[in-house]
Structures are given as C-alpha cells and as structure tokens.
Image 1 (cartoon, rainbow, N blue to C red):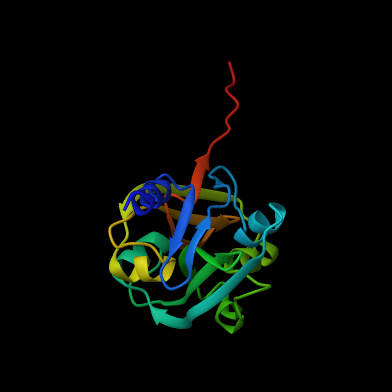
Image 2: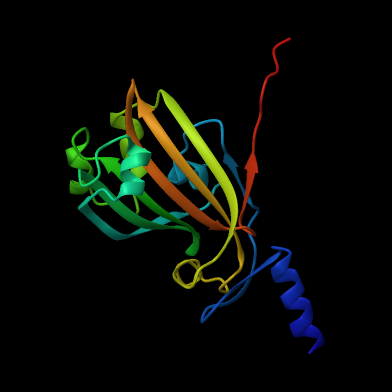
Length: 194
C-alpha cells in the first residue's frame, strides 16, 4: 500500500506517467507550449530529441455549426475541413487536436494524410504563412473521450488551447488542442517597450 500511495503521489505531481494497460514510466520533461508564436508539435517534440508520431482519427468536410462558423468568420452551414489527430511523444499520447479549416481557401487540407511525418499545423504553415493569431488558454477537466485518448483518468486536469490563425487578412483555421496538465506547461516571453 505504501508503494502504491507513493506511485500515485508521484503520478499526480507529473514525475511518473501511469498508462492503463502499459505500465508506469518516468515522465519526460514537460514541453513548453509557446503561446506567442505558431508552433508545430512535430518540430517541438523532434527538437527535444524525442520521437513524434501521430494518429489521424478523422479527416473530412463537414458543414460549419453556428459556433465553428463564428470562430472562422463564415456563414453557418458552409463547408469546412475537419480533422481530429492524436499526437504522441515516445509512444505516449500527448495532445488531442481538433481543427477546422476554411475549405474554400484550403480545399487540399482534407486530401492530406496526417500522422508520422505531417501535422495539420505543419501543412498549413508551409502553404499559408501565419500573419495573425488569437489564443485562448483554459484549465479544464478530461471528459471520458479525452481521458481515453490521452490515457489519463477521467476528470484529470488538462490544458486546452484554442487558436485562430489568419493568413494575410483571411481567417483560415480554428483549432482546439487538449493535453494533460501534467505533460505541458505554457511559456510567454514579452518585451515591454517604455
């Protein structure tokens, strides 16, 4: 019981990762999520010397709901490219991404194969350079589907980053990215002009 309690406490502090059906592992250093620039999770993980992999769960054209239409600045019912991708670091699920893209501007988005060598962010940054971004960051609790995807307990603390990006004057993408709170940290560096 003492060992189990110690493992539970170390897991809560983010020192150990417990993955159902796989075991308990020493946690890798938390990634810093830069909130002042567009980032590609493939580059972030590769730069730290770790192995990136991805699993494309969904990729299709869907009609924009009222909420998505508002976020993309389009009319409700307009076609949008939608993808759902689970990102892994060293085979541990790190982030669940759901992205909506203006299909009229980026029709080839839904023709991609997102996974080991291509991420939605990487594809968009190469073809549509980011001119403006808007981030919303909030603490949230893992729903059952998110907990299952990230191999964490339901109601575990998570970080959710929502980001809208523009290329030129055109709003092109809206994304929600959710990660376990124990696996990521946010970093903001600002220069104050006097």
